[in-house]
Image (tube, rainbow, N blue to C red):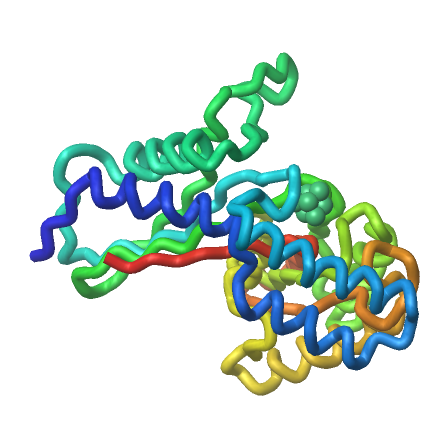
Length: 280
Ligand code: SF4
């Protein structure tokens, strides 16, 4: 049994909240660099170069790469042989978010109530998904998820007769309608199957896979590549100014579902595709 201190989780969460906002992950920066080589639009190339420069400035000056510092979303894999001492795991994560956003001078982007809308003043509560797994490690992935891209995301309960063509149509329609509002180039997360709550969770979870990494199942990997090419043919381009790079990548996750259902969720992530990770 491994004993993990509450305070250690707080410090690690605080660190990755700041790193997520200051240091765009290598997979995303590399995707910008690769896209510059293939982008045919002059405006698109220019935007991609500006995004690379923006990421450099954020890292060098320790400033957020975007004013929208996002909702703090966590995917946690908690080994069943871990014992957390000194407080609750969720409380440690929220305290880490509070500390990280305060020390990093990051914008507080959360309101306490969707109707009355008073800012909570510390970017909490975080959105926390916890999975209990074998072993004695605590594996924490964090994403600072921008509001613009989240707003353009969508979910639909298709019926099985819609088939894969219906799924593809819904994905393309969602990306097309998002246009420039989701701050492209995008990373598109797709969840197919499950039920009304599982499909959006799968879509979100898929966004934590590094850009450029294909799904281990070869049929899903082929679907990811097909959709990526189709989305880039839409011509929306970087920041919606036209071009070949509407998406840096497409991720698909699937799950079993009811015989009468075919749920599909599309979770868009913007070019500030911020994700960080630690393991204790
Ligand atoms: S959607 Fe992304 S790029 Fe656009 S404002 Fe929000 S965080 Fe920034």
